[in-house]
Length: 229
Image (cartoon, rainbow, N blue to C red; front, side):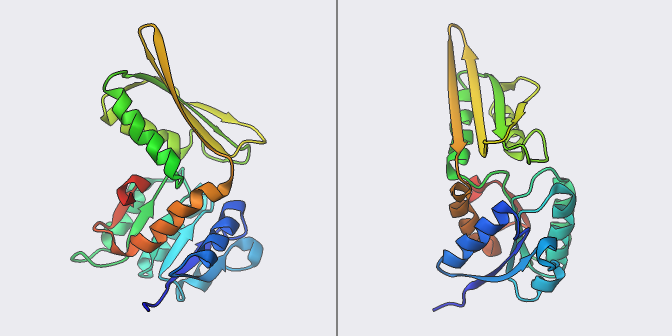
């Protein structure tokens, strides 16, 4: 039996972080090696030595620094936090990379497999109905606006030839978790593709997959769960 992958979680006391901890503990081949969170009086530095991978679900102001610290310590990082400078993370990942070896960084705006499928289906639709608007709806505690998922979707749709109307429509209300609609318009018709995450457990298969795969990815930085599917 191979040794389990040791996974530490940054932001472990938050709702997403706590759900990630439970998922890692339940996943075959993974071992929860540490929980970092100010609410637990535990800093990231306290868990790095015992980790092969760190999963970050913190806040935008913290996530970039956490990811860079992981890479500098030789630890791969899986980032679910959005709203930070991806270019700075790419530079840090490339600095830690030497001859195809080194820690890897993996970033996914959304770890729900259904959300990734929504983006891929949207790309196929864009070739035939290029006019589209994006509506994203999240809980009222989400800090970034628009969401990382919406920004990533807009990027993918534009690459596929869509005319993504501006702005992205962002809704923040209690009672929501994570939801997104792509509304395509054509002559005399519309087509709406909607994905709903009604529970945070929807993200866990993607997080577990990223923990298992991040250490063997071919590049220092990989963006998007679609790269793993």
